[in-house]
Image 1 (cartoon, rainbow, N blue to C red):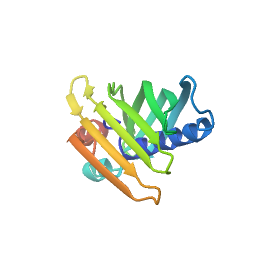
Image 2 (cartoon, one colour):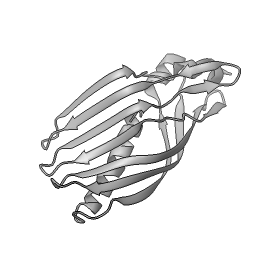
Image 3 (cartoon, rainbow, N blue to C red):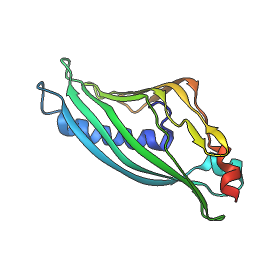
Image 4 (cartoon, one colour):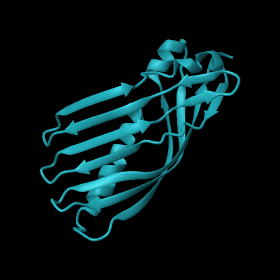
Length: 174
């Protein structure tokens, strides 16, 4: 997912799995369309460590996806329209910043008949520019996660995948 972030990747993957399992019984036929409302708040541990105070991210918006059963029985779930904004905030300082990441990449989860799962994301996500400050976060490239039927996970990333949003620290410090 373009840079999805560990938490967002897991949330989207879980949603994809739920939708995929629900759709798996409908072999063949036209793709199904789903709309998922996103409203999630979580601590950013790497950013908090970089800033020296707790920093949280609140994501909200909608994710529209397509589910399709492939000829081999695999179920493929792809995001098609992502409209998610984020608020980064620090409770200790009372400061927050609303950003519109505007990622243009795609995310696909494929549930294979053998029980394995492939997650693939590409493009950009998180080109965050704050007026008066400039670019504070950028991430692009691709990420592929392979989950075996026994639960073994292999992740391969290429590109610029930042581990934190430390560029927001001066803004959130107040």
